[in-house]
Image (cartoon, rainbow, N blue to C red; front, top):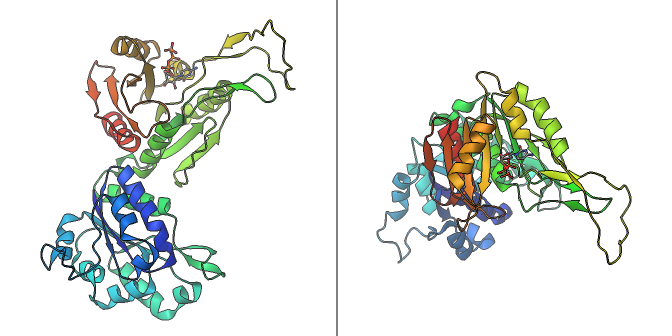
Length: 396
Ligand code: CTP
């Protein structure tokens, strides 16, 4: 999508670059239009750096290619969002006033989705004139990302705080997908596993791996934006996800992930297992901290963990879809196809550690999706959010 982000002069403007970043990370193009007052709170350099484009602020700037340049954004943008939206811009929109680049563009931006994230002090938000203007904009079909109740910059607490950038981003993506007919996953329940597992050695040590959980969280978020109900079972990770369609279960070890996944799978229509599950765990787990064993070293005896994906493959009923991942370094296609057969999968997503920019910890990935019928679909190097979209659109 091409997204025009309008920024007006409130303290919440400092969060606008975070919204721009989320949009860019999800693969959208962004152009920013700021009011003069907005640029008191956030610099053009910041907005230009995160958006990758120049900022439009001045109707008559000498750098403009022509005087109606800002208006041309109405044709360029698929979607427009104003975050933060002050009482002033809300009033101008409701009254049809165009006296700067942003308000003029808003007057001409019609027939396409428009989102507002209001932000102001509680008394201003509750003012009857502001509420009347809001009612007017709602009746015209403007999508409102409602302000939250919380601590405000003026030191008081109440309604008027701008919704968090993640919530604004999710609302835009969700409504837009529903409007463009991509909300087809509505109500579908999908199990997603993510992250590493930690296998305890003693009270302070574990065996783990470098998985960050980013691919699994990107899948959960993309599914939720498509309207699916997501059961996210995740190993230890610092990642957060606050989409209301995601129900999260935190686990630590492979056995805990096995218990959670096997009890949730019968209630789901699909499962995507992207977790990097430890294949082995220490046979004994000390409740205390083990002492140094001396120069001879120490031996840890490991036992095999259950294979969650293969177990779900055995449980799979008609109408359920099962997607696994394969991380391979050698004979990639052959090994991935073998895993697909052995674990009774519908699709396997092959990650190659040989590709620069793909694999653990990084924000990008390049995958080959292999189908049960032998079909293959290889993506270019994309952000993990874009790869998640590719997987969902290709397999579900
Ligand atoms: N997987 C799982 N439970 C395990 C091990 C792996 O559910 N105990 C899942 C992973 O989430 C992934 C897929 O199986 O979707 C493949 O994981 P991978 O580590 O590539 O393969 P393994 O089956 O462990 O085989 P190997 O390590 O021998 O390559």
